[in-house]
Image (tube, rainbow, N blue to C red; front, side):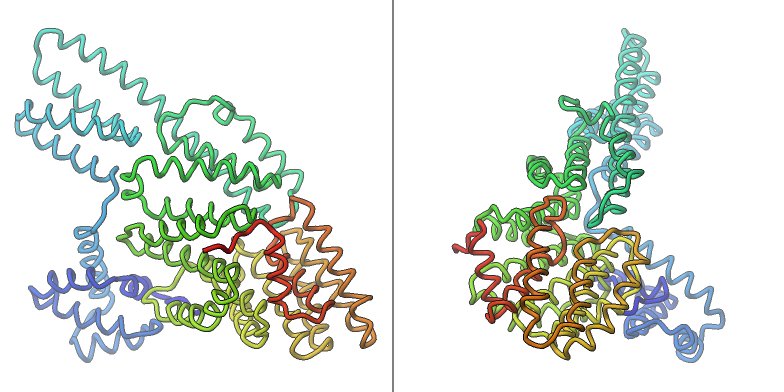
Length: 519
């Protein structure tokens, strides 16, 4: 769980096979490079970075007298090699490279060739809405005209300058959409899984009144169009209108899939959008399983090249497979528990570089929920204990606090109400320190505390039924319909009331919803 505490260690651990191979080819050509290869292998062998061991290795094995200087040069050569041999550069960077080629042609006096190159680059920049690139291209067109004076040259320069004014306007509009999105993103993180403060709501309303977010707005490029729907989707989530959120997220994915080149250029963006849509299907339970699995196929088949893209894909696919197994047939669920989750846990711990903390937390949380529903309380509490070992994170504070509530319930199942009472006091302190207003968590803590003073045999009438009814009432409030774990806790309470297993109650719950487990 501990993070590598040195930038070189983190970088080395992130290398894939191709990057290792290319660096070896580069470094094997000099004595310094061969020392770098030995250092790379030594650093890669460390589970956690140890500065003193690294220094000793350089001094005793590599005969390096100045460790700091060697480490800096190693880092610079590795970073330069990674940049030089990147498997995938996005389209903006490719256009920038082609613009630099045009500069070479202009400086060499090959103005006719430069002019032909400009036409091709300009069309591509216009297609993908790369406004900065379009502006740079227009500047080159003006340079070419100025270097090749001829009939109507002055008129063409005037036309190009007018075109430049339009591009600058589009560029400003595109940047404004990005700014609005970032503002909404930060506010939605602040209010996620909690009630919205008056101050936050005022800021959100101010954003939504912006002319660029009104119906009928025109977008300078497809990215701005996606951001428009992303802002509206986040607003819909904050205000509890999940139907509207689903509509906007559908549109975002549709915009991605209109041009596969966009996905090739930014696979992680597409993966995020598709996984959000699948998550909304999960909330709505308004999809066929066949459709859900088709989305899983799209996620898994998206070609990725960078560590960042692979990480997004790994986490998104794993989360969706956890949900698919939990909501599939009983045989699917048994396969999830017996085979998929153990394999996933192995994959998570054996990855060369760690997942981002928020992704890792989400995976552990959903694994714990699956074990909980299966009735494997000991395994579930092992996972929630792992979550408790993470440092506090603002972005998933909601998940961490609810995991502690789930631990509370698991301890009650395993050891009785005395242990649970100890944990409830800890959870109350966490809630008081939290910036979130967590209604579900507060309800759970209050009912868990009641178990201490309830006589054996009276728990069902005095605690479990009132607890369940309060959560059902909370679930009817759309602003709380996406609360983490609310359905699973209701199913646990129903199991306590009926004497059935939790999974049997969960099956009843999903069978009464609109989920289709048809193959």
